[in-house]
Image 1 (cartoon, one colour):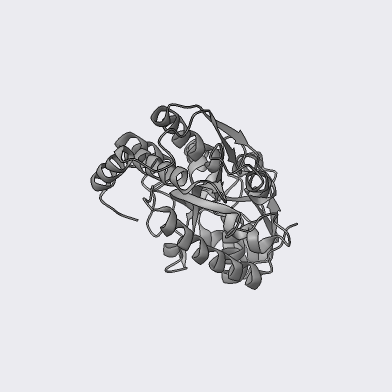
Image 2: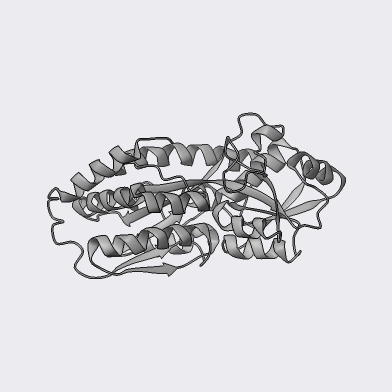
Length: 321
């Protein structure tokens, strides 16, 4: 995920200056972005960080419309049915690909109903516990789970943190754990902080302030190396599972049929935004790593992700509770 950001910024700036057939005057009115998560969660955070600068760049308001719940399928279904005129977009996480296999009828086809715009950034997932839980690391938590049945909360059925729990705790650690889905990351974190459930799994960004304040305790992060913002939290890989790596990504989509020129213009705009030093710094503090990519590259990545998580769902027996 490393690249020359100076080069990316220069290329993006040049691309924005180039004419884009059919898109010279787009947009001419505010754009609504349906967010597949509640306020305060990683989808909302990314949507607002990018949306604020996108509004300045395009000269039109960007309205974030949070529609969390059902593994992001509520927002995704609405967006799939929207008029493909470039004025309704979707901001969703990697639950977009997982829900396609987890739900019998997710209400959309991840390959046919959308035009992928850009994968704006990725974040490792974070496993955390209430401070009263007698485990300071992953191996201690696994040992505890072999003595008593544990439950864990996530940002929702089909979110990658949910499937990280299924893959890591069930398939790899062999624990009999119960998954408790929430509408987004924020209520899952608050449930753990309040002691309502012992374990939580969400994308890393919204957990940082709660871990630093001591309201929850970080157990393991799914990145290959420790994160600078939480250097005391060990990786899954260093805690008994070499090579383990999972991510939550946050991306933007347009309904299928949206003019290609609009999609290209939005891709170039977001590429320029996430390459800006202040945006990169803000996202890095939150745990996001921007990854420049074209709509075509992102489309191919979606195919890989659908296959990956479909296998985890099948092998673990994960289901919508």
